[in-house]
Length: 491
Image (tube, rainbow, N blue to C red; front, side, top):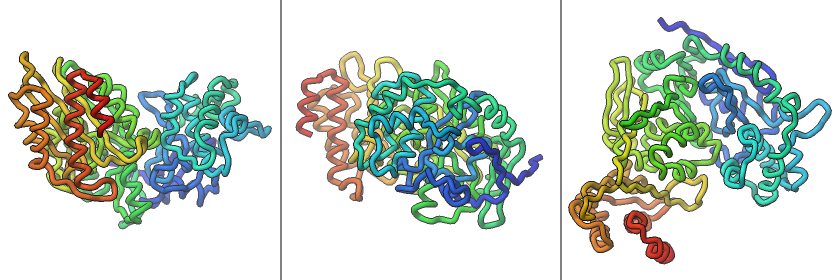
């Protein structure tokens, strides 16, 4: 029997917060600035790109307190139950001394106009907490989601390298000083009953468990389900949508499981990109660089694999490789579970095979057979933190004679849904995996796809890029670096 509660509870810096009035579309940033007057956290882009709004959010994962950088501008306030929100103001000490992260930025001249600086401080603080000795790749990855137009990144990177050596006692650092106390407090704040706030037209629902989630969606089949809000947040900040009710699921441990078996990898729908990265890369190494180009660190800490699938976007980065790998989706409702191939979930633009009351529960990625070739390529105007113009995934198996025995290719950005290149696959099957075969197979793309022109890319560009990616895959899988280098130079 579902027992209702009416309060969102979390810790803000060193203060416990209880909120009974939480509008469904209120962002964490607006609440911090307008209601708490914590104006160190800035609003820049309001879409999770610039990082000026970066805060740290602590949450319990398998009993351990983990802090992650997030974009407060698109994080919705209703998702904050049982978390620890840390803003730049929390780094201040009673005697006015700067935190080592802040001091390093001062010493290395890592700030000019200063508007973006609090966001850089918080991203670097998150790195400082997580990594004792970050190298340049780790530093650059931590700063992917922070944009600066004044200083340039070299002084900021030097500051990050310098701060790693500064390790004061736990008594000095505000998070380390409170870690044990906050861990106990967040465990106590985990919802034991479903939280319901607001009146009709502006409701927030926080289910206590997955069974309660199924019950809620049976009663509210048109509810907006929010995990990381990296997509829904923009509905609020850019499209000014009214949402009712909003059902938050980011806290449900049943949706954050990762399990590996000889058959493959099962990932809960609430697992973030950051959580999933190592497991997916362990199964398919080519997925690591792709995940590293999904948004910035803040977005990867919020966004989920399940959300990237459930929103049905034709340019989502994970569906093409997952479809090429033969992934299967599990949907759940009060009627039970239903499993289907991931490619069958996408019916048409904006339409998925999801019955009223169903939600994405988990994803299964089968272990690729030994000897197969797999690659995934993302094409975008900007290397980091950019939306795909197209994303192509390729998987082939060759027989003993070097002929294609199986092929699965899938593209995002080439149609209204993630879509397999079925005619290209059929053309290749049984033929030798050679440049001559691939040159002929390129023509079949015209049958498989009719891409659109938009601000990301023209239809002609998308078609040519898709064909060229197939040629690149051939050269890479054939182990011909010289020809690949020449091809990339010409492309």
